Image (cartoon, rainbow, N blue to C red; front, side):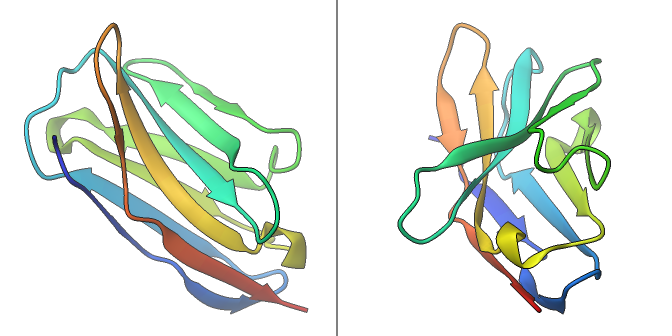
Length: 116
């Protein structure tokens, strides 16, 4: 098991920005997909964005044009830049690293709250 350490959540007003980071504290195969999921109260966990090694990001329709996912392969770190935040973006955000043909690792979750 490789722990993933998330940071960057918090409280922000609508229209504001936050940047989430997630770093793997151990060695992970570079052949992986890094992603961010979120879960709002009473709702199922949903994929927000994902990015493969050497690839471009894929996004949920609800965040396209506002969120940007990126990764630093040398640091085993994935980022989520969130701009133009809306109250409906309020959720616990989880990072995930899925090794192709291998294990899946999850972060502990970080709360993002957007006030109107």
